[in-house]
Amino acid sequence: MKKIFNVLVPFLFLSPSLQAAENYCLAVRGNGELMPAHWGVMSAVVQKKGMPSALAGGSSASISIFLMESLALNPRPLSNAENALLIKSFQGYFEAMSQTPEGKALAAILGDKAVFKALMERAKKLDQLKVTPQEMILVRKHLESLNTLLNSSDFTGLINPAFQHYVKETIFFADALASGKEGVSEGQVAYRKDQISIAIKNFGKFNAQTDETLFFRPGLINFVHLAKIFGQMGDFYAGIELKNKSVQNQINQDIDQFLKLCLPGSENLTWSKLNLQRPACRQLFGKAVLTYREASLREGRKAVRINEAIGSRLASFPATSVLTGSAVSTYRNAREHYRLNADLNFGTAFRVSEKEVRFGYWGNAENLKNIERNLRSSSLTSNDEKSKKFLNLGSRSWLEALSSSPAEPGLSSLVDLNQQLVSAGGWSDLHPTLILKAHGCQDIVLLTRRGGESMFAQGVMKKLTNYEGFDWADWDNLTVSQRKQKNSSGDSSDVGAYASSWSRLYNMANTESSIRKSLSAATTVVCTNWDKFDARKEFHALVEDSFTAPWLTQSNQLCR
Image (cartoon, rainbow, N blue to C red):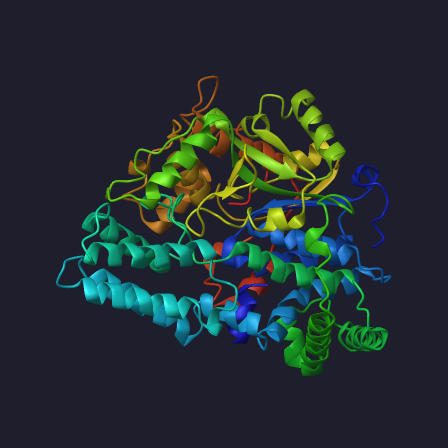
Protein backbone atom coordinates (compact mmCIF):
# COMPACT_ATOMS: atom_id res chain seq x y z
CA MET A 1 0.00 0.00 0.00
CA LYS A 2 2.83 2.40 0.83
CA LYS A 3 4.24 1.87 -2.63
CA ILE A 4 1.25 3.29 -4.42
CA PHE A 5 1.06 6.32 -2.18
CA ASN A 6 4.66 7.05 -2.93
CA VAL A 7 3.42 7.69 -6.43
CA LEU A 8 1.00 10.35 -5.34
CA VAL A 9 1.34 12.65 -2.97
CA PRO A 10 5.73 32.08 6.69
CA PHE A 11 7.99 34.55 6.50
CA LEU A 12 6.63 35.41 3.08
CA PHE A 13 3.84 37.75 4.11
CA LEU A 14 5.46 40.75 2.46
CA SER A 15 4.01 41.97 -0.82
CA PRO A 16 4.63 39.22 -3.41
CA SER A 17 5.54 41.78 -6.06
CA LEU A 18 8.23 43.25 -3.80
CA GLN A 19 9.60 39.89 -2.73
CA ALA A 20 9.82 38.63 -6.31
CA ALA A 21 12.67 41.02 -6.92
CA GLU A 22 14.39 40.14 -3.63
CA ASN A 23 14.20 36.36 -3.63
CA TYR A 24 14.09 33.54 -6.15
CA CYS A 25 10.98 32.17 -7.88
CA LEU A 26 10.22 28.55 -8.73
CA ALA A 27 8.76 27.31 -12.04
CA VAL A 28 7.61 23.68 -11.94
CA ARG A 29 6.98 21.42 -14.92
CA GLY A 30 3.93 19.14 -14.66
CA ASN A 31 4.60 15.42 -14.94
CA GLY A 32 1.47 13.41 -14.09
CA GLU A 33 2.02 10.38 -11.85
CA LEU A 34 5.72 11.26 -11.61
CA MET A 35 4.78 14.15 -9.30
CA PRO A 36 6.90 12.91 -6.35
CA ALA A 37 9.94 13.86 -8.46
CA HIS A 38 8.89 17.47 -7.82
CA TRP A 39 9.24 16.92 -4.10
CA GLY A 40 12.77 15.57 -4.42
CA VAL A 41 13.91 18.66 -6.36
CA MET A 42 11.89 21.11 -4.27
CA SER A 43 13.45 19.85 -1.06
CA ALA A 44 16.94 20.17 -2.55
CA VAL A 45 16.24 23.71 -3.81
CA VAL A 46 14.70 24.89 -0.55
CA GLN A 47 17.58 23.42 1.43
CA LYS A 48 19.99 25.56 -0.59
CA LYS A 49 17.98 28.71 -1.35
CA GLY A 50 15.10 28.83 1.13
CA MET A 51 11.41 29.13 0.29
CA PRO A 52 10.59 30.87 -3.01
CA SER A 53 8.69 34.15 -3.24
CA ALA A 54 6.60 33.09 -6.24
CA LEU A 55 5.51 29.81 -7.81
CA ALA A 56 4.10 28.72 -11.17
CA GLY A 57 3.08 25.43 -12.78
CA GLY A 58 0.24 23.50 -14.41
CA SER A 59 -1.22 20.00 -14.33
CA SER A 60 0.35 17.98 -11.49
CA ALA A 61 2.67 20.94 -10.81
CA SER A 62 -0.38 22.94 -9.70
CA ILE A 63 -0.76 20.43 -6.86
CA SER A 64 2.91 20.63 -5.91
CA ILE A 65 2.93 24.44 -5.83
CA PHE A 66 -0.27 24.40 -3.73
CA LEU A 67 1.43 22.14 -1.19
CA MET A 68 4.60 24.25 -1.20
CA GLU A 69 2.60 27.44 -0.75
CA SER A 70 0.75 25.80 2.14
CA LEU A 71 4.03 25.01 3.87
CA ALA A 72 5.26 28.57 3.25
CA LEU A 73 2.23 29.85 5.17
CA ASN A 74 2.97 27.76 8.26
CA PRO A 75 3.43 30.14 11.23
CA ARG A 76 6.29 28.08 12.67
CA PRO A 77 9.69 29.82 12.34
CA LEU A 78 11.18 27.10 10.16
CA SER A 79 14.75 27.03 8.89
CA ASN A 80 15.64 26.10 5.29
CA ALA A 81 16.60 22.60 6.44
CA GLU A 82 13.34 22.16 8.34
CA ASN A 83 11.26 23.30 5.36
CA ALA A 84 13.24 20.91 3.13
CA LEU A 85 12.56 18.03 5.52
CA LEU A 86 8.85 18.82 5.60
CA ILE A 87 8.74 18.83 1.79
CA LYS A 88 10.34 15.39 1.84
CA SER A 89 7.60 14.37 4.29
CA PHE A 90 4.93 14.84 1.59
CA GLN A 91 5.72 11.20 0.86
CA GLY A 92 5.23 10.34 4.52
CA TYR A 93 1.85 12.04 4.54
CA PHE A 94 0.57 9.67 1.84
CA GLU A 95 2.11 6.68 3.56
CA ALA A 96 0.11 7.55 6.68
CA MET A 97 -3.05 8.16 4.66
CA SER A 98 -2.81 4.66 3.19
CA GLN A 99 -4.52 3.51 6.41
CA THR A 100 -7.63 5.64 5.78
CA PRO A 101 -10.72 4.94 3.61
CA GLU A 102 -9.89 7.74 1.18
CA GLY A 103 -6.29 6.55 1.04
CA LYS A 104 -7.33 2.99 0.29
CA ALA A 105 -9.66 4.23 -2.44
CA LEU A 106 -6.85 6.21 -4.01
CA ALA A 107 -4.65 3.13 -3.91
CA ALA A 108 -7.37 1.09 -5.57
CA ILE A 109 -7.85 3.46 -8.49
CA LEU A 110 -4.10 3.62 -9.08
CA GLY A 111 -3.83 -0.07 -9.66
CA ASP A 112 -2.08 -1.50 -6.63
CA LYS A 113 -5.07 -3.50 -5.48
CA ALA A 114 -7.20 -6.37 -6.70
CA VAL A 115 -10.18 -4.08 -7.14
CA PHE A 116 -8.48 -2.24 -10.02
CA LYS A 117 -7.70 -5.57 -11.60
CA ALA A 118 -11.42 -6.29 -11.30
CA LEU A 119 -12.11 -3.11 -13.26
CA MET A 120 -9.73 -4.24 -15.98
CA GLU A 121 -11.36 -7.66 -16.10
CA ARG A 122 -14.76 -6.09 -16.61
CA ALA A 123 -13.36 -3.94 -19.41
CA LYS A 124 -11.96 -7.04 -21.13
CA LYS A 125 -15.29 -8.86 -20.83
CA LEU A 126 -17.11 -5.90 -22.33
CA ASP A 127 -14.64 -5.97 -25.24
CA GLN A 128 -15.47 -9.60 -25.89
CA LEU A 129 -19.22 -9.04 -26.12
CA LYS A 130 -21.19 -7.87 -29.13
CA VAL A 131 -24.38 -5.87 -28.88
CA THR A 132 -26.73 -8.39 -30.42
CA PRO A 133 -30.09 -9.72 -29.19
CA GLN A 134 -28.36 -12.96 -28.26
CA GLU A 135 -25.69 -11.30 -26.07
CA MET A 136 -27.64 -8.27 -24.76
CA ILE A 137 -28.37 -10.00 -21.45
CA LEU A 138 -24.64 -10.55 -20.91
CA VAL A 139 -23.81 -6.95 -21.91
CA ARG A 140 -26.28 -5.65 -19.37
CA LYS A 141 -25.05 -8.09 -16.71
CA HIS A 142 -21.44 -6.92 -17.05
CA LEU A 143 -22.46 -3.25 -17.07
CA GLU A 144 -24.45 -3.80 -13.86
CA SER A 145 -21.49 -5.59 -12.32
CA LEU A 146 -19.24 -2.66 -13.24
CA ASN A 147 -21.74 -0.17 -11.81
CA THR A 148 -21.84 -2.09 -8.52
CA LEU A 149 -18.05 -2.08 -8.32
CA LEU A 150 -17.85 1.67 -9.02
CA ASN A 151 -20.25 2.33 -6.14
CA SER A 152 -18.39 0.10 -3.69
CA SER A 153 -16.57 1.36 -0.58
CA ASP A 154 -13.29 0.51 -2.30
CA PHE A 155 -13.62 3.70 -4.35
CA THR A 156 -15.03 6.04 -1.68
CA GLY A 157 -15.78 9.29 -3.49
CA LEU A 158 -13.01 8.99 -6.07
CA ILE A 159 -14.94 7.75 -9.10
CA ASN A 160 -16.03 10.53 -11.42
CA PRO A 161 -19.83 11.02 -11.13
CA ALA A 162 -19.94 11.74 -14.89
CA PHE A 163 -18.39 8.32 -15.59
CA GLN A 164 -20.85 6.62 -13.24
CA HIS A 165 -23.71 8.42 -14.98
CA TYR A 166 -22.40 7.33 -18.38
CA VAL A 167 -22.39 3.69 -17.23
CA LYS A 168 -25.91 3.95 -15.76
CA GLU A 169 -27.19 5.68 -18.87
CA THR A 170 -25.69 2.91 -21.01
CA ILE A 171 -27.57 0.34 -18.93
CA PHE A 172 -30.75 2.35 -19.53
CA PHE A 173 -30.03 2.42 -23.28
CA ALA A 174 -29.40 -1.33 -23.25
CA ASP A 175 -32.74 -1.93 -21.48
CA ALA A 176 -34.54 0.32 -23.96
CA LEU A 177 -32.98 -1.54 -26.87
CA ALA A 178 -33.83 -4.95 -25.42
CA SER A 179 -37.46 -3.93 -24.88
CA GLY A 180 -37.78 -2.63 -28.45
CA LYS A 181 -38.22 1.05 -27.61
CA GLU A 182 -37.62 3.50 -30.41
CA GLY A 183 -34.81 6.04 -30.42
CA VAL A 184 -31.98 3.71 -29.33
CA SER A 185 -29.81 1.73 -31.73
CA GLU A 186 -27.46 -1.20 -31.38
CA GLY A 187 -24.72 1.12 -32.64
CA GLN A 188 -25.24 3.55 -29.76
CA VAL A 189 -25.10 0.85 -27.10
CA ALA A 190 -22.08 -0.79 -28.74
CA TYR A 191 -20.25 2.54 -29.00
CA ARG A 192 -20.91 3.46 -25.36
CA LYS A 193 -19.88 -0.02 -24.19
CA ASP A 194 -16.57 0.39 -26.02
CA GLN A 195 -16.05 3.91 -24.62
CA ILE A 196 -16.49 2.59 -21.08
CA SER A 197 -13.89 -0.07 -21.76
CA ILE A 198 -11.48 2.48 -23.28
CA ALA A 199 -11.85 4.80 -20.27
CA ILE A 200 -10.69 1.98 -17.98
CA LYS A 201 -7.95 0.53 -20.20
CA ASN A 202 -6.49 3.91 -21.22
CA PHE A 203 -6.40 5.32 -17.70
CA GLY A 204 -3.18 7.29 -17.30
CA LYS A 205 -1.80 6.55 -20.79
CA PHE A 206 -1.94 10.13 -22.19
CA ASN A 207 -2.38 9.19 -25.85
CA ALA A 208 -2.93 12.31 -27.97
CA GLN A 209 -2.08 10.54 -31.23
CA THR A 210 -4.79 7.92 -31.77
CA ASP A 211 -7.30 8.50 -28.94
CA GLU A 212 -10.08 10.27 -30.85
CA THR A 213 -12.40 10.83 -27.89
CA LEU A 214 -9.95 12.02 -25.24
CA PHE A 215 -11.63 15.47 -25.15
CA PHE A 216 -15.13 14.03 -24.62
CA ARG A 217 -14.92 10.74 -22.76
CA PRO A 218 -15.63 11.02 -19.01
CA GLY A 219 -12.64 9.78 -17.06
CA LEU A 220 -12.49 7.56 -13.98
CA ILE A 221 -11.22 10.12 -11.48
CA ASN A 222 -13.34 12.62 -9.57
CA PHE A 223 -10.88 15.54 -9.66
CA VAL A 224 -13.03 17.70 -7.37
CA HIS A 225 -12.83 15.02 -4.67
CA LEU A 226 -9.11 14.54 -5.32
CA ALA A 227 -8.56 18.30 -4.97
CA LYS A 228 -10.28 18.22 -1.58
CA ILE A 229 -7.97 15.44 -0.40
CA PHE A 230 -5.00 17.64 -1.30
CA GLY A 231 -6.83 20.53 0.37
CA GLN A 232 -6.83 18.69 3.70
CA MET A 233 -3.14 18.03 3.19
CA GLY A 234 -2.62 21.74 2.56
CA ASP A 235 -4.32 22.61 5.84
CA PHE A 236 -2.02 20.24 7.73
CA TYR A 237 1.15 21.77 6.27
CA ALA A 238 -0.13 25.35 6.61
CA GLY A 239 -0.65 24.75 10.33
CA ILE A 240 -4.41 25.43 10.26
CA GLU A 241 -5.32 24.74 13.88
CA LEU A 242 -7.99 22.45 15.25
CA LYS A 243 -10.67 23.67 17.65
CA ASN A 244 -9.58 21.09 20.19
CA LYS A 245 -6.52 22.78 21.68
CA SER A 246 -5.30 19.73 23.62
CA VAL A 247 -5.26 17.60 20.45
CA GLN A 248 -3.59 20.43 18.52
CA ASN A 249 -0.95 20.75 21.23
CA GLN A 250 -0.24 17.02 20.98
CA ILE A 251 0.17 17.30 17.21
CA ASN A 252 2.52 20.26 17.67
CA GLN A 253 4.57 18.24 20.14
CA ASP A 254 4.78 15.31 17.73
CA ILE A 255 5.98 17.63 14.94
CA ASP A 256 8.50 19.25 17.30
CA GLN A 257 9.81 15.82 18.25
CA PHE A 258 9.88 14.77 14.59
CA LEU A 259 11.98 17.80 13.62
CA LYS A 260 14.31 17.35 16.59
CA LEU A 261 14.90 13.66 15.91
CA CYS A 262 14.95 13.65 12.13
CA LEU A 263 16.52 16.95 11.07
CA PRO A 264 20.18 16.25 12.05
CA GLY A 265 21.93 14.63 9.09
CA SER A 266 18.84 14.68 6.88
CA GLU A 267 20.25 17.20 4.39
CA ASN A 268 21.64 14.57 2.01
CA LEU A 269 18.90 11.99 2.47
CA THR A 270 15.59 11.39 0.70
CA TRP A 271 12.57 10.47 2.82
CA SER A 272 13.07 6.77 2.10
CA LYS A 273 16.75 6.76 3.05
CA LEU A 274 16.08 8.83 6.17
CA ASN A 275 13.54 6.30 7.39
CA LEU A 276 15.82 3.38 6.69
CA GLN A 277 18.21 4.94 9.19
CA ARG A 278 15.56 6.27 11.59
CA PRO A 279 12.21 4.40 11.35
CA ALA A 280 10.84 6.49 14.21
CA CYS A 281 10.66 9.47 11.84
CA ARG A 282 7.92 7.85 9.76
CA GLN A 283 6.08 6.73 12.89
CA LEU A 284 6.14 10.15 14.57
CA PHE A 285 5.09 12.00 11.46
CA GLY A 286 2.39 9.48 10.56
CA LYS A 287 0.94 9.77 14.04
CA ALA A 288 0.62 13.55 13.64
CA VAL A 289 -1.04 13.18 10.21
CA LEU A 290 -3.63 10.65 11.37
CA THR A 291 -4.39 12.50 14.61
CA TYR A 292 -5.03 15.69 12.63
CA ARG A 293 -7.26 13.89 10.14
CA GLU A 294 -9.33 12.11 12.79
CA ALA A 295 -9.79 15.27 14.87
CA SER A 296 -10.82 17.23 11.76
CA LEU A 297 -13.50 14.63 11.01
CA ARG A 298 -14.82 14.68 14.58
CA GLU A 299 -15.03 18.47 14.57
CA GLY A 300 -16.65 18.54 11.14
CA ARG A 301 -13.96 21.05 10.23
CA LYS A 302 -14.24 22.50 6.73
CA ALA A 303 -11.08 22.73 4.66
CA VAL A 304 -9.54 26.20 4.60
CA ARG A 305 -6.67 26.28 2.12
CA ILE A 306 -8.50 24.69 -0.83
CA ASN A 307 -11.18 27.43 -0.67
CA GLU A 308 -8.75 30.33 -0.42
CA ALA A 309 -8.34 32.63 -3.40
CA ILE A 310 -5.20 31.87 -5.37
CA GLY A 311 -2.64 34.61 -4.88
CA SER A 312 -4.28 36.04 -1.77
CA ARG A 313 -1.45 34.91 0.51
CA LEU A 314 1.50 34.32 -1.84
CA ALA A 315 2.32 34.93 -5.51
CA SER A 316 1.25 31.61 -7.04
CA PHE A 317 0.25 31.07 -10.66
CA PRO A 318 -1.29 27.67 -11.49
CA ALA A 319 -1.96 27.27 -15.22
CA THR A 320 -4.31 25.55 -17.63
CA SER A 321 -5.18 25.61 -21.33
CA VAL A 322 -8.49 27.30 -22.11
CA LEU A 323 -11.00 27.23 -24.96
CA THR A 324 -12.49 30.67 -25.60
CA GLY A 325 -14.90 32.36 -28.01
CA SER A 326 -16.70 30.14 -30.51
CA ALA A 327 -14.47 27.19 -29.54
CA VAL A 328 -16.58 26.87 -26.36
CA SER A 329 -19.87 26.32 -28.19
CA THR A 330 -18.11 24.13 -30.78
CA TYR A 331 -16.85 21.89 -28.00
CA ARG A 332 -20.06 21.82 -25.99
CA ASN A 333 -22.13 20.92 -29.06
CA ALA A 334 -19.72 18.11 -29.89
CA ARG A 335 -19.83 16.90 -26.28
CA GLU A 336 -23.61 16.67 -26.43
CA HIS A 337 -23.44 14.74 -29.71
CA TYR A 338 -20.95 12.35 -28.09
CA ARG A 339 -23.62 11.35 -25.56
CA LEU A 340 -25.85 9.88 -28.30
CA ASN A 341 -23.13 8.97 -30.77
CA ALA A 342 -22.89 5.72 -32.72
CA ASP A 343 -20.26 6.84 -35.27
CA LEU A 344 -16.96 4.98 -34.78
CA ASN A 345 -15.10 7.95 -36.33
CA PHE A 346 -16.47 10.47 -33.84
CA GLY A 347 -13.83 12.99 -32.77
CA THR A 348 -11.56 12.70 -35.79
CA ALA A 349 -12.90 15.90 -37.35
CA PHE A 350 -13.15 17.96 -34.15
CA ARG A 351 -11.08 21.14 -34.45
CA VAL A 352 -11.07 24.66 -33.00
CA SER A 353 -9.20 27.79 -34.02
CA GLU A 354 -5.63 28.21 -32.77
CA LYS A 355 -6.48 31.76 -31.74
CA GLU A 356 -9.23 30.51 -29.47
CA VAL A 357 -6.93 28.18 -27.52
CA ARG A 358 -5.43 30.36 -24.81
CA PHE A 359 -3.02 29.66 -21.97
CA GLY A 360 -4.68 30.70 -18.74
CA TYR A 361 -3.22 31.54 -15.32
CA TRP A 362 -4.89 32.06 -11.97
CA GLY A 363 -3.47 34.40 -9.34
CA ASN A 364 -3.80 37.75 -7.65
CA ALA A 365 -5.75 39.99 -10.05
CA GLU A 366 -3.32 42.91 -9.84
CA ASN A 367 -0.30 40.66 -10.28
CA LEU A 368 -1.88 39.11 -13.39
CA LYS A 369 -2.61 42.54 -14.87
CA ASN A 370 1.03 43.52 -14.36
CA ILE A 371 2.21 40.25 -15.90
CA GLU A 372 0.02 40.76 -18.97
CA ARG A 373 1.29 44.31 -19.41
CA ASN A 374 4.92 43.25 -19.03
CA LEU A 375 4.55 40.32 -21.44
CA ARG A 376 3.32 42.74 -24.09
CA SER A 377 6.08 45.32 -23.53
CA SER A 378 9.16 43.16 -22.95
CA SER A 379 11.48 42.54 -25.89
CA LEU A 380 11.75 38.91 -24.78
CA THR A 381 8.01 38.18 -24.88
CA SER A 382 6.25 40.84 -26.99
CA ASN A 383 6.41 38.59 -30.06
CA ASP A 384 6.51 35.26 -28.23
CA GLU A 385 3.82 32.79 -29.31
CA LYS A 386 3.09 31.43 -25.83
CA SER A 387 2.99 34.89 -24.27
CA LYS A 388 0.48 36.05 -26.90
CA LYS A 389 -1.85 33.31 -25.64
CA PHE A 390 -1.76 34.59 -22.03
CA LEU A 391 -5.21 34.70 -20.42
CA ASN A 392 -5.93 36.24 -17.02
CA LEU A 393 -8.19 33.80 -15.13
CA GLY A 394 -8.32 36.00 -12.07
CA SER A 395 -8.18 35.13 -8.40
CA ARG A 396 -10.37 32.06 -8.13
CA SER A 397 -10.23 29.35 -5.48
CA TRP A 398 -7.57 26.68 -5.34
CA LEU A 399 -10.44 24.19 -5.66
CA GLU A 400 -11.14 25.44 -9.18
CA ALA A 401 -7.49 25.18 -10.20
CA LEU A 402 -6.80 21.76 -8.68
CA SER A 403 -9.98 20.23 -10.08
CA SER A 404 -9.30 21.45 -13.64
CA SER A 405 -5.57 21.90 -14.33
CA PRO A 406 -4.63 18.26 -13.43
CA ALA A 407 -7.71 17.01 -15.33
CA GLU A 408 -5.78 16.38 -18.53
CA PRO A 409 -7.45 15.08 -21.71
CA GLY A 410 -7.69 11.32 -21.48
CA LEU A 411 -8.03 11.46 -17.70
CA SER A 412 -11.08 13.67 -18.02
CA SER A 413 -13.32 15.32 -20.55
CA LEU A 414 -12.74 19.06 -20.77
CA VAL A 415 -13.91 21.04 -17.73
CA ASP A 416 -16.32 23.99 -17.80
CA LEU A 417 -14.86 26.92 -15.84
CA ASN A 418 -17.84 29.19 -16.52
CA GLN A 419 -20.21 30.03 -19.37
CA GLN A 420 -17.44 31.56 -21.48
CA LEU A 421 -14.42 29.34 -20.73
CA VAL A 422 -13.57 25.62 -20.86
CA SER A 423 -10.37 24.18 -19.36
CA ALA A 424 -8.47 21.66 -21.50
CA GLY A 425 -5.89 20.76 -18.84
CA GLY A 426 -2.55 22.08 -17.61
CA TRP A 427 -0.33 20.83 -20.46
CA SER A 428 -0.20 24.38 -21.88
CA ASP A 429 2.84 25.86 -20.11
CA LEU A 430 5.29 23.28 -18.82
CA HIS A 431 8.11 25.85 -18.56
CA PRO A 432 6.34 28.75 -16.80
CA THR A 433 9.37 31.01 -16.45
CA LEU A 434 8.18 33.82 -18.71
CA ILE A 435 5.22 34.76 -16.53
CA LEU A 436 7.48 34.72 -13.47
CA LYS A 437 9.92 37.02 -15.23
CA ALA A 438 7.02 39.29 -16.18
CA HIS A 439 6.01 39.21 -12.51
CA GLY A 440 9.38 40.74 -11.64
CA CYS A 441 11.41 37.66 -10.72
CA GLN A 442 15.14 38.11 -11.34
CA ASP A 443 16.30 34.69 -10.10
CA ILE A 444 14.16 31.88 -11.55
CA VAL A 445 14.72 28.19 -10.83
CA LEU A 446 13.07 25.89 -13.39
CA LEU A 447 12.31 22.34 -12.31
CA THR A 448 12.15 20.22 -15.47
CA ARG A 449 13.34 17.00 -17.12
CA ARG A 450 15.65 16.14 -20.00
CA GLY A 451 14.42 16.46 -23.55
CA GLY A 452 12.21 18.85 -25.46
CA GLU A 453 8.59 19.77 -25.00
CA SER A 454 6.12 17.08 -23.92
CA MET A 455 4.96 14.96 -26.86
CA PHE A 456 1.56 14.87 -25.19
CA ALA A 457 1.32 18.69 -25.15
CA GLN A 458 2.38 18.90 -28.80
CA GLY A 459 -0.10 16.17 -29.70
CA VAL A 460 -3.01 17.74 -27.82
CA MET A 461 -2.39 21.06 -29.57
CA LYS A 462 -2.34 19.19 -32.89
CA LYS A 463 -5.58 17.35 -32.15
CA LEU A 464 -7.31 20.51 -30.95
CA THR A 465 -6.23 22.86 -33.75
CA ASN A 466 -4.42 20.86 -36.45
CA TYR A 467 -1.67 23.50 -36.30
CA GLU A 468 0.98 23.53 -38.99
CA GLY A 469 4.49 22.15 -38.58
CA PHE A 470 3.70 18.99 -36.61
CA ASP A 471 2.82 15.70 -38.29
CA TRP A 472 2.61 12.38 -36.46
CA ALA A 473 3.69 10.64 -39.67
CA ASP A 474 7.18 12.05 -39.10
CA TRP A 475 7.37 10.12 -35.83
CA ASP A 476 5.62 6.83 -36.58
CA ASN A 477 8.62 4.74 -37.63
CA LEU A 478 11.03 6.03 -34.99
CA THR A 479 12.21 4.07 -31.98
CA VAL A 480 11.72 5.52 -28.49
CA SER A 481 15.32 6.76 -28.38
CA GLN A 482 15.01 8.26 -31.87
CA ARG A 483 11.85 10.08 -30.85
CA LYS A 484 13.59 11.53 -27.82
CA GLN A 485 16.53 12.64 -29.92
CA LYS A 486 14.28 14.23 -32.54
CA ASN A 487 12.24 16.02 -29.89
CA SER A 488 15.36 17.28 -28.07
CA SER A 489 17.06 18.49 -31.24
CA GLY A 490 14.07 20.04 -33.01
CA ASP A 491 13.90 20.97 -36.70
CA SER A 492 16.53 23.45 -37.87
CA SER A 493 14.76 23.88 -41.23
CA ASP A 494 11.63 25.29 -39.59
CA VAL A 495 12.93 28.61 -38.23
CA GLY A 496 12.95 32.28 -39.16
CA ALA A 497 10.21 34.64 -40.28
CA TYR A 498 8.13 31.85 -41.81
CA ALA A 499 8.43 29.36 -38.98
CA SER A 500 5.34 27.21 -38.43
CA SER A 501 2.99 27.54 -35.46
CA TRP A 502 4.55 24.39 -33.99
CA SER A 503 8.04 25.82 -34.38
CA ARG A 504 7.12 29.12 -32.74
CA LEU A 505 5.89 27.22 -29.69
CA TYR A 506 7.91 24.02 -29.34
CA ASN A 507 10.90 23.79 -31.69
CA MET A 508 14.13 23.28 -29.73
CA ALA A 509 16.15 24.23 -32.84
CA ASN A 510 14.38 27.61 -33.05
CA THR A 511 16.03 30.09 -30.68
CA GLU A 512 12.90 32.28 -30.99
CA SER A 513 10.52 29.49 -29.96
CA SER A 514 8.59 29.76 -26.69
CA ILE A 515 10.34 26.75 -25.21
CA ARG A 516 13.81 28.15 -25.91
CA LYS A 517 12.85 31.58 -24.57
CA SER A 518 11.40 29.92 -21.48
CA LEU A 519 14.59 28.00 -20.86
CA SER A 520 16.70 31.13 -21.36
CA ALA A 521 14.59 33.04 -18.81
CA ALA A 522 15.63 30.62 -16.07
CA THR A 523 18.78 31.47 -14.13
CA THR A 524 18.98 27.85 -12.96
CA VAL A 525 17.54 24.73 -14.60
CA VAL A 526 17.31 21.63 -12.41
CA CYS A 527 17.58 18.88 -15.02
CA THR A 528 15.98 15.65 -13.83
CA ASN A 529 15.58 12.43 -15.77
CA TRP A 530 12.16 11.45 -14.42
CA ASP A 531 10.87 10.04 -17.71
CA LYS A 532 13.38 7.22 -17.28
CA PHE A 533 11.41 5.76 -14.37
CA ASP A 534 8.20 3.85 -13.85
CA ALA A 535 6.84 5.59 -10.76
CA ARG A 536 5.01 2.50 -9.51
CA LYS A 537 7.99 0.17 -9.84
CA GLU A 538 10.96 2.52 -9.38
CA PHE A 539 9.69 5.14 -6.99
CA HIS A 540 12.77 5.36 -4.78
CA ALA A 541 15.06 5.71 -7.79
CA LEU A 542 12.74 8.39 -9.22
CA VAL A 543 12.94 10.55 -6.09
CA GLU A 544 16.67 9.92 -5.68
CA ASP A 545 17.28 11.05 -9.27
CA SER A 546 15.33 14.26 -8.77
CA PHE A 547 16.93 14.98 -5.39
CA THR A 548 20.43 14.71 -6.88
CA ALA A 549 19.64 16.14 -10.34
CA PRO A 550 22.25 18.51 -11.84
CA TRP A 551 21.74 22.27 -11.71
CA LEU A 552 22.47 24.00 -15.00
CA THR A 553 23.33 27.67 -14.56
CA GLN A 554 24.90 28.67 -17.88
CA SER A 555 22.43 30.23 -20.32
CA ASN A 556 23.79 28.20 -23.24
CA GLN A 557 23.21 24.86 -21.53
CA LEU A 558 20.02 22.99 -22.41
CA CYS A 559 18.49 20.18 -20.40
CA ARG A 560 18.75 17.46 -23.07
